[in-house]
Image (cartoon, rainbow, N blue to C red):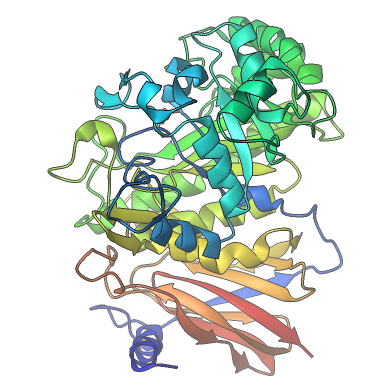
Amino acid sequence: MNLRNTLLTATVAALALASPGHAQQASRVSVSIDTAHPGPVIDPAVQGQFAENLGRGLYDGIWVGHHSNIPNRNGFRTDVLEALKQIHVPVVRWPGGCFADTYDWRDGIGPLSERPVGINTNWGGVNDDNSFGTNEFMNYSEALGADAYVSGNMGSLPPYTMRKWAEYITDGGDGAMARLRRANGRDKPWTNLKYWGFGNESWGCGGHMTAEYSTDLHNRYATFVNPAPGAPDFVKVAAGPHDDLYDWTEKLMQKSKDRLGAISLHYYVFPYGWDHKGPALGFDEDAWAITLEKARHIEELIAKHSAIMDKYDPEKKVGLYVDEWGTWYDPEPSSNPGFLYQQNSLRDAEVAALTLNIFHRHSDRVKLAAIAQMVNVLQAMILTKGDKMVRTPTYWVFDMYKVFQGATPYPVAIQTPDYRYGDHDVPMVDVSAAKAKDGKLYLALVNSDPHKAAHVVTGMTGSASGQILTGPAMDTHNSFDAPDTIHPVAFSGTKDGGKLAFDLPAQSVAVVEVRQR
Ligand code: AHR
């Protein structure tokens, strides 16, 4: 262990005993894990990423072009690519978002000098030279080892155009689209196209449709858009509801369930609502508490949408894909407000961990999720500035949680006090448990109280070790000047009356491997 990690580990130990400015006795929490009743496997795709053509998400964030001074591989910045590989990104959704329903894929193929310049009317009204198009996206997801999720334009282009796009990506034969792809430098079709979205937020930026109309359109487009003969199948994802728009789910299931493999759900945490979101840093405890309370609310939404789906699909063949989720704050001062660039702190790490734990508990329906967004936009993994890059606290949660990709979850019973602030009230501690693909048992533990440590006692014997993410302030974050302020450090279990226990500092997220005896 180097000096930096030794110091951080010592800090974590100190935080476990006395939290910042509010030394209080640790709260006792008890946890029991039911290994006799494993749940459905946690689809790796719940750790998916959303990469819209928005602000500096693609341009600057992952794509700098072949002639950039920033080190790159085929135009993809190397630092970001390598950092994303480390977290095992399972799937990337592109090109939107709202942008998807304005996008014509034909503008983004062929020689760069011949691609038309478009205007990104949703996001800042800036020009788009279309240098990041289908080949770039498919090659990037391939380089990441990720599946590709293409969001097709159902709002403003005919189904024929969408059909040709699927052909361009998947046809291994000698059709016109396969020839065009070859002329553009790609011989073999890509085989990692696993998901196809039909429109985005059709109730809003995707066309302000009614549920009935959107459902009919879905059926029409989904009839005509298919992989080329012999190509791997893709999951057809219908543009679904946001938040508690339950009627949308009902209509889709009533009229489309045989023409879709999944329904999307979008849920963002705006601390104080759309008109007053609040800052990403420098917030007070009320903002901390309301953000975590709203993050936890997704569990109720998933449960209720799932219950509607159960009526039509008791065998749970149709997935609920939370393909946009995360925190949405005021844009960083001095950034273009249309670019949705925001900093990311320990509070976002808590939101990420709590949300992933909820996905684990709903692994029967939630088979894919995509956090918004991968780089430089909203709750990002990575922020860039020129040739600099920082990994955010959210990135570190995804890094710690990658052991849960493909793991088998166990029900967890937890007795925990609540963390209360004003009118806001959430369970203080949240725990997820699963047997990973390597056969080992992992626990994820989240303490949402910004002042109090938790003494978590399990019913198991044995030992545990892993990593923890915490910091002295609620908005502890990494900046371009101090990119390593917060990162995971070593963390181990302790004993209480012969049982495995954890001294979990205030405002922390830990993932540990348990070695039972
Ligand atoms: O992620 C930003 C935007 O939020 C997406 O474009 C849209 O689908 C959602 O409203």
